Length: 64
Image 1 (cartoon, rainbow, N blue to C red):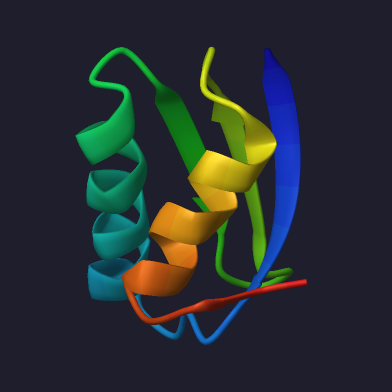
Image 2 (cartoon, rainbow, N blue to C red; image 1 turned 90 degrees about the vertical axis):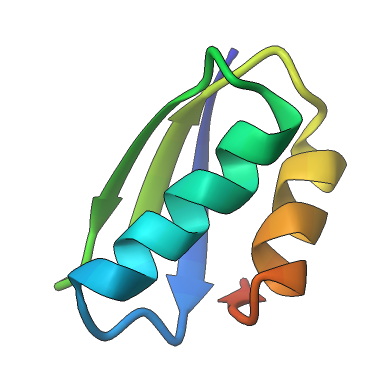
C-alpha cells in the first residue's frame, strides 16, 4: 500500500537513511523515498500506517 507522511526533523541524508532503516525494520521489502526539501516520505509497505508512523517517531522524528 502506498502511503505519504509529513516528517519533521530530517535535515540531511543521514536522517533520510535513519527513517529508511526504521521503516525497513518493520518491513524489509518496503520501498521508502524521502524528500528533504518538503519533509515528505513516501512508503510502499503492507504494514499499517500507525506502525510505520510509530517507527519513524521512535527513530527521533515527528510525523504530522
